[in-house]
Length: 282
Length: 282
Image (cartoon, rainbow over all chains, first blue to last red; front, side):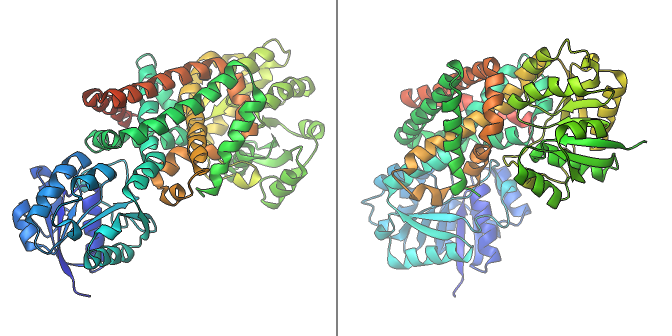
């Protein structure tokens, strides 16, 4: 296997973790970082995530593969710009929303050089210091509208994800955005809202935080997630997120109604139904 | 320190874990289990959680300390019955709701022998096989209305919790029930409701579960919790849980309104506020 020069545009949680994995699996000749933040650039070098930091145009020229790992509002501007500068390089992204993005570049003359992907891994932390060595392993990665990519580009990206231990799923952009609303975006909204619910109360009482246990921590940890990443995700996937959010509020109202009417049998039924999630998560 | 014969009534997650800890810390001469379920009794013995299984009346007679670790609907019937049979033993519970329970036995002639406690530890699993060796360590335990307990009883229970690594908080029953609604009960409801939201969708689509990642798992894992434990908790703490649930639904509606009105600035603000939860959970 011939190694490649890989540019990582956005050396944060996702980009930094991918850089570590590409190096660990012997995929990279050289890893070039690109980041608007001088602080992030410095940290990425200090942490050894990248070999060097370059500006974007130079990085594009010097790379065989360009990974875009920036928030999705920046991504939608950046991708067409990068494709404009692309000769025969492979361009890929790791963004959480796909429909708008793929519409934006659907008729770009370099569309074939681009592979749209979404690795289903992340944490509530952000920045280069959040990058993790064994990230992505044993998780799914979605390849979106793969048929629109050139075969060589698709093959390399698929090989790269397999090498870092991911299993590949193929999906249409519209399906991807519906599914991630259910398995990722709504979890973040409930967690943010739960944090706000409890913080609202904290104004009155400090004691509740001494009591916070693992169960609370589990449901609320995503509330630490970065708004710069999540605001654009929610906005770009607005319609799907609203559908799921409406459904979720209606599920919560069922619990409310059970309590108000002391409907113990229905409360039991709701919880028994929820228990079926055991089929999906171990 | 004189070790004691300890009866564990309900050898499940909480009782079983406490039994393991009491043995590990050299607190028990003998641990006697009591459980209506023959299957649980057999497992508790096989797992070495208890030395022997006895019926409740014999266990009360042969013990110095009686720990009640049954669902709170059973507890509210069981506690006065056990106090009726109590000579000078210490009786304690580990239940998640306190106000109704303490009202029920407030004028019992043996009230002083009883210490009301709530260790802030648990998992989504239940039964003897869910018992964990290092449970409770470095967590908080609430001692509720401690002034109503005899000094010797309160002292032993406090010493026991310290020995197993917990830090003690004193609280009134009414405050306890408000606070646990915020830091525990609502987390379970949101998790159950989120599971039902996603399972509702699953009827149409299987693919979403291949995508479920750590973030989803984190917010939904409590949905595996046992209805036999949680239905009575929600019912007994109905008023507080409804207050928090209403607040939580109103917080979710703010997110909904941001999306509907494309109010990016307010969405950013909501998430930044939620980030403050970092002060509380690491």
